[in-house]
Length: 213
Image 1: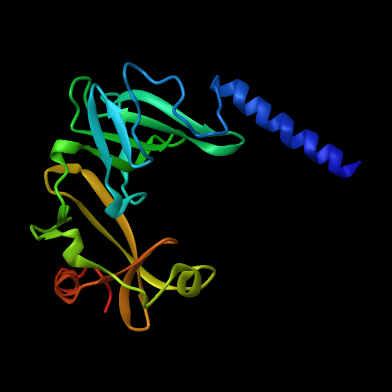
Image 2: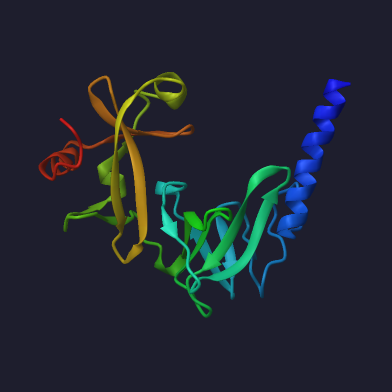
């Protein structure tokens, strides 16, 4: 009986949430009610809008911190109901936008960026916030198998710091990155990858008092 009551309560809350937001939900996570010719691309790393391909900026995927505004154009949304939050997709302009944004619909913050294919330059050139120091991501962060999220970060009390930088050509595209000091070295660690900060990059961070000694 208790399990039945709990199940009905959860179901009721989910239905109320859906009715309050007036949203259609899809288990697949596909884009719902897209505007114009906005659609998913050939894979989960590309989007298509106004005939242009937009490529996911994988280097810092999920670590962008961009406040959306009324000037951004809402293109569509995805949902994995009943697993929230919903994600919205925006363009930074009505016609031929330079980039698309996606992020949680609940706090109007974008954490993923898709650059127009003809503008995506690899390696990605960034600027350390509060300085004029420019760097390319692949030189500052080097792939490593020395550490892993599951072994060294998950469920553990770790020593870390937040660093901020932005894409050189688009200062609005700001990254809020959490780095960790593990075994005396600094790393950027996600559940699916680990990158070690290079010595030259660390030297700049220390010179600007952006990480603790």
